[in-house]
View 1 (spheres, one colour):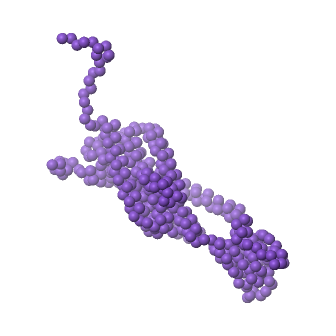
View 2: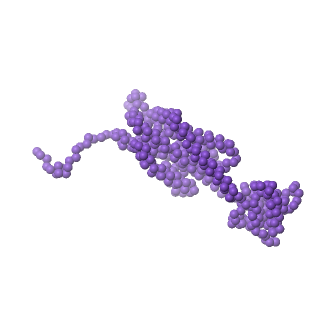
View 3: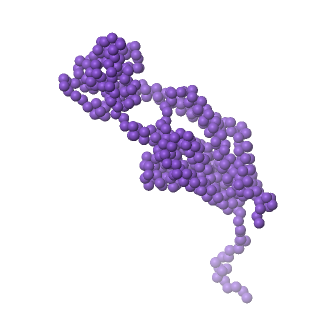
Length: 413
């Protein structure tokens, strides 16, 4: 009867908890962890500064313009009204572009002109009865300025403003799908960046303990599977602490910015479940990649060997991310099914699927499959470490090899 308490040896689960608690405490209260938290903040600050400059250039280069297609006299009146109001209203007054001067009785298809030109909306009709055609957001923003322009063109008192008729062109279903695709892409990219940024800690930790001979002491006292599981979950806990700190700082910036930042469209499963799935899939992606990094770190003895051996894994993980990104645009296709079945691309694919598909049962099945793969990869890595590094296992005494002439020579009596 193998009772772990009577034999004085911890079970695999208890030993893994001991290793995880030891590594988590040692890393969390070290001075290097503070600099680790500060590391990603510098690229974020640079990215925000570059984004602000790029947005300013984009706004200056791509200012939305309002096309006008009316009779010649009406076009001249609208242009004169715009010239009179622009100095007082500044950017609130849209730039007018003459699309066509209509002859008496001539009509124009506003939707066709919008599709072929570089204008954001088209103004037709007359100054007394203007018609504004474009996307709902754009024409809603320009409804007031256009009414003011028409009143100025008519030369009437400020109390009488013409009623602007709105003709929306955007499709709600297409816009919703495009918005969810944007949310899926953002979630996928964030998950990949966090995984690749934080998974490297497993390698450095294991190489350091190998050089100090600590890993051999642990392997002699507890099962190797427990050592690997403990280190993985300790690094995962440290990663969650780092993400919590960065999320707190990011949330403070979002609250300070208010409505200045663009809002992502709501995912299909809703934001609460999307955030929960994001945490779960980060854990799965981290454990899957970390189990491979543990196997690499167990075989490497120097930092140079770690970099050499981990480079192919990093490139393969980048290919898995590209596969998941492509599968995101092909829901229900064989490409998406293959991306879900491959363990290393499955977390990215399923998180993007959660943003586009409200079904929950496929998410549960994918999480169970990824958890099973984590257990398999950790056990394979532990077995590889025992056989290649610890040299454990049954061994037979080596027999002296005879030369060919000695084997052909008959034995003496």
